[in-house]
Length: 73
Image 1 (tube, rainbow, N blue to C red):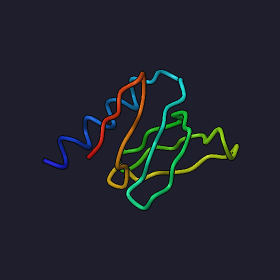
Image 2 (image 1 turned 180 degrees about the vertical axis):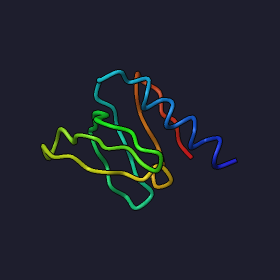
Image 3 (image 1 turned 60 degrees about the vertical axis):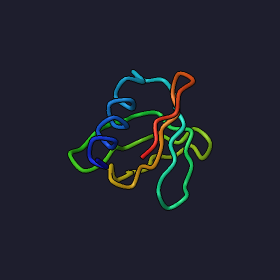
Image 4 (image 1 turned 90 degrees about the vertical axis):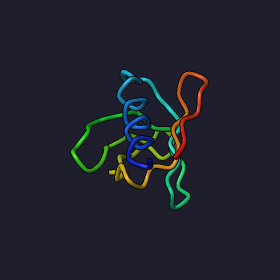
């Protein structure tokens, strides 16, 4: 079940098409993120608030907010 929800979250990130989105991780970090690159295990995002890039493991993403909808694990 968690794998299916993780896939839904990653699909939502892919659909952002360069737009910024909200990203929350299981360890409590929150990003105003823009997708830079996807790897098999994670995604590299640009954090608009801090102005730097982060690699976030796909399994560590707890929710994504984009286009007025929130998808969570």
